[in-house]
Image 1: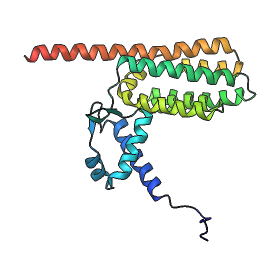
Image 2 (image 1 turned 90 degrees about the horizontal axis):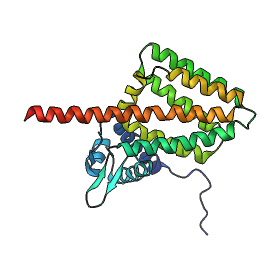
Image 3 (image 1 turned 90 degrees about the vertical axis):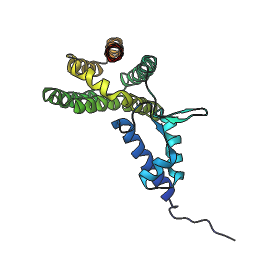
Image 4 (image 1 turned 60 degrees about the horizontal axis):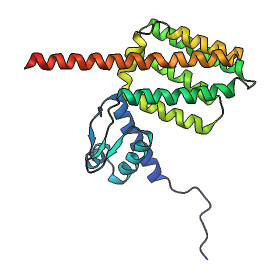
Length: 237
């Protein structure tokens, strides 16, 4: 009778797939694979130096994350976010973060969480003074990820991570929001202090206001970019 192997099972395939997934994800978020680009499975495999199997698995994972989209009879593409997409991302993010807050305000770890969040705020303040907007963005993500994870819900945390990945598709526009948002530090500081106080009503109100401004700012930036492109096209005729 054949015995089942009791030790660790080979994970080479899984590890390779994960590595390829991370490489493609990084290429998308860094703009190497820009919005609207079609992914060629064969070329990606050659670029990564792997067979097409791990690439196929990576693409399926990124389709689930929303970092790629599949169009019937056309192929797989890096999505181009629209105003509706952005509003939907922030609509879902608002629901996720406020759900986390409702659990957090009834927990006994509010003060400890508040202190960790204020640490992120201080790092954000230093980065803003140095005009290091990429670091400001990183600290912003750290702040909100810390907040959601503190709710202790794996499903909520997974959903939030997916939303953060999709937001990476408009990172350049988000950096523009950080540059022009004078009250960014104060808003995060207020959220952290309200968590410590346990004032659920004021906390949810502050979060709603905090998440609404980026949508309006990015949509205005996109509209201005379209107008500029249209004017340039007319000039070039």
